[in-house]
Image (cartoon, rainbow, N blue to C red; front, side, top):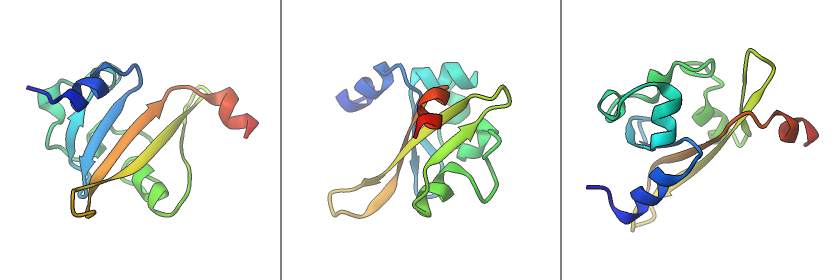
Amino acid sequence: MLSKHYRLLDALPNPVVIMDNDMHITFINKAMLMLSGFSLKDCIGKHCSIFATPLCNIENCCIKQYQRGESAIQYLPNGGANRISISVLYNKKNKPIGYIIVIFLNETKIIFLL
């Protein structure tokens, strides 16, 4: 059963993924499942490259961009763009334990105004 916090994340309309430090998926919300077409069973424990986005498995993957202090933007073949918001997750001892990723779909107008 999901904790209250996970239920809140699951209810968000934006796709959300939580990963450990090795980029293995530990949580994925309903919006991300719908976007990806995968089932929960397909994703949990798998490396995030399972999504096979144009940024996966390259030097400009979202996490590597974040680690370099860059904004993660996923440009789409149709000219659109998704903004990727990434934050580090910490345990009670303030040790990094992974990442939470929220995707803001097709925010082309906002991105190009910045």
